[in-house]
Length: 178
Image (cartoon, rainbow, N blue to C red; front, side, top):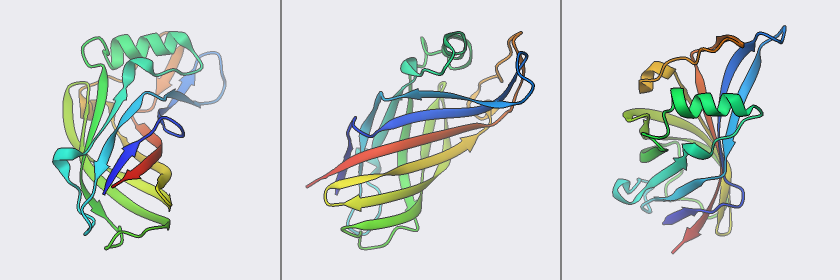
């Protein structure tokens, strides 16, 4: 089965805890983009067809509530002129029913290789999904440290601190194709 991402209902986001100088409490910096494309191909037994599966996020389009943060993240942390995309190649699914269900909700883990900032590392996403006819919707999350992908924790004079933990979230809408 081939599941192709569609723009309607698909959004990628990062979430990082920060403490700004002008605030007396920490908050989450959240950047989002709808520039997500790709597909996941799964055999009837639930195994992933790695060679045909990839999800790509255009990091140049990430936007938060602060344009200065966005420019800093693009130019310094992610270096999107050199590394414009993040790519995830799924390799394994754990906890998915076999044979694959035709409808309903489920939770499972999706493992694979994530490439950010020119560095590829294995990651595992926690996925909550709902299959309804040809539509597969849900949310996937994973987290890691900046240094895992060769990035430095952002430092700027208006930022007192940034946690060394990045949470990635993907709200997805796949359409199943025969």
